[in-house]
Image 1 (tube, one colour):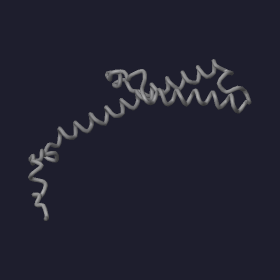
Image 2 (cartoon, one colour):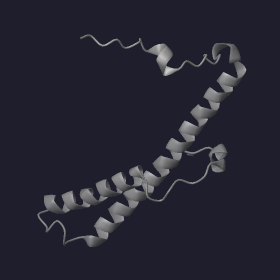
Image 3 (cartoon, helix red, strand yellow):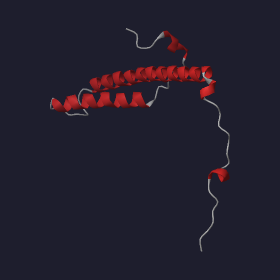
Length: 110
């Protein structure tokens, strides 16, 4: 089962440190700490190999979630730009006004 289609290979890879990787890596580490606490073991000291494993799995999962997210947004942008290109009558540029033309003139009351 493919999560990312072949046309996503043309996109640049995401950064290694991104919000999804950090968040899901932290959640993986906290999952290991919670598991230690539920089994009445010292939370930070025991099962360091599990803590590293869970954090790494969460980090990699977050990286791939970012890849899917970037592909989805790139596809939406491509479709939107294509729609705008095909329907120029719906997207006529507006005339530019200065700020003074928009705001009413100021008359102080004394």
